[in-house]
Image (cartoon, rainbow, N blue to C red):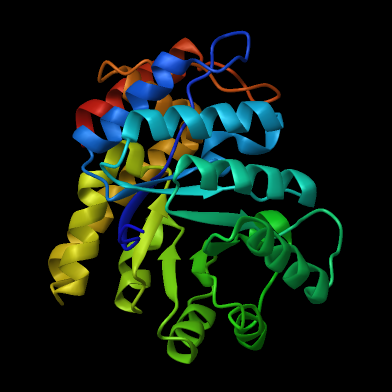
Length: 292
């Protein structure tokens, strides 16, 4: 298994106008992340990949294409989580067979699952696949909050190696890192990377790293080196960029920024808005000129 610390892009997926996967465009996004953003790895099949609007076979296709293009150049994490446990297991087996370095799974959502049910979900995926697992905690979208003691219960399974922590509760982050120093934490909010890194996270997984990966690494490495003033200046610029991206439409704007650099990043998948207006395309060009 490759080193899973460092900077991981949450991989975008290029779709054709009819919603089908644009294989060539997806390959170009993978290559851009490796060759231009110099990321340590890719987090494939997450929210940024519009995963929860896709069929099981489409998810498999994305895992296959990303692995074929990245080969063994970088680390690959496959997000296989689903409210359908059978689908999560099927995807986990498939990604494992492709040679992904680790699995990740979002906490099961929508229904108010008990913690015992959530633990059973992770234990089942691990037992069926034999792979290591990263918990994907994103409570503002799932409504699932995991406390310090509950992390300890999950970590009793030696295959659960850490958490993708996409939450603003930095007190919880600090408590979890102190309580379980041998388990990894990846920061999930790009705009709060400096404070997360200062609390000892082992890496970060972000959607804006697809276009802003170089700065993300600078923030991470400067903060780790104690050069907080320098890191904060770069975080300020990063957050100005992120603010602009969010105001213009997150995924479509990142795709437009990639297009402006020659990458066939395609459209978004319905029911998302599939394409930017002319006004928003013009704004994306301004962001590109100013920040990238």
